[in-house]
Length: 503
Image 1: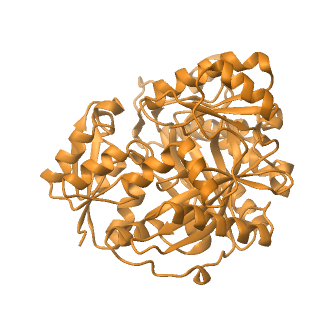
Image 2: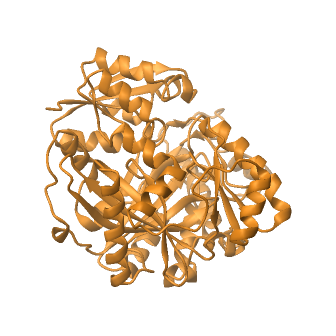
């Protein structure tokens, strides 16, 4: 039986996993880099161990160090979270060889579905629709050009081991093939250590819709319905919602059945995600399988009432799934916004720094998965996401209204964030109507940027004025007065000298 879990990750996902462990009476172990000594996941865990410098390859990607800590502290299991080593088959095997339970699928499943070409072949065999394209690696740019001409433009060139938008190139014409082929291979090699690429027909005006699945050791698999993930920038998701406003009930049932078939084809164990592209005519195609917990899993938890981390732990403990497909149904509507430390007006570049002030929203149907606090310095070495804001309501309209309210209440000062950008998305007519696809942010990029009349600027000015007024009152009402003391406010001193201010 699992009694102590090492979380091989950092930030909000580490805290989120620890919370479920604590509710189940399990002890937790945090690992951290030198840059994360003051991170909340370090303070929240029952035990914490430093595993190296800030660079990921020396800490969170160092298999030897993580396993050594797990053995040292006598952990029973390792939860990988998402990112880092979460889809690394070697890590799974090393954990099992050390006598540790890996909370996730088998190494063979990861290898089968982590290789996109291999996954396409398996899905075809399982009767799951796939996007037209190649089922073998491309040998050279000339072969890529020939196949592009046969498939017809536009086409998408993809890294076989890719993910997160890396190693992907959209090709519109024959003139672009050679450059795209070389660039995709180079990026794939630097990101994944593998330069294998393949081609797929580009689905125009697609919706990115995924289905959450759960499987156990005994061949039982269920899906936990859909998530709409089409609000993307450079293939990175920003806003997700469940259920999708685009799917019909009939299409939802059909896609759910195919998601289960895809998971059964690889004997899936644990929590995973089947991702689909759905075109404007509601034809759907398998995109990829993520053999781990997704960033956006909270919206599924909110509409299903299921704690996915607890289910992962139960399956890893050898238990059967506690529910059948007919026991699961969607209730209400949930939306998630990813809160990032980035400059949305300057190419969305990361903006690490110290959080000077933090006011988090609350109220009915509000959830925040985060790891930051006032005074915390966000390191520059990792992903700029600092938390996820999730709301639930009985209808999609009410969920949007609630998200608008909580985004207005959410205040972070000391660094730049995407809060204002997210607020504008919630008011965009296409989003409100549910009539958007993966090109949404690109189509409406100008209107989503800040305008001169942005309320945030007015709010900041009001805060400054209120603080100056507070300083005035603090000085004037002070019981101790020193004649030669410098006034608290230089603005007040200047005003008195010039006769501008009256007392």
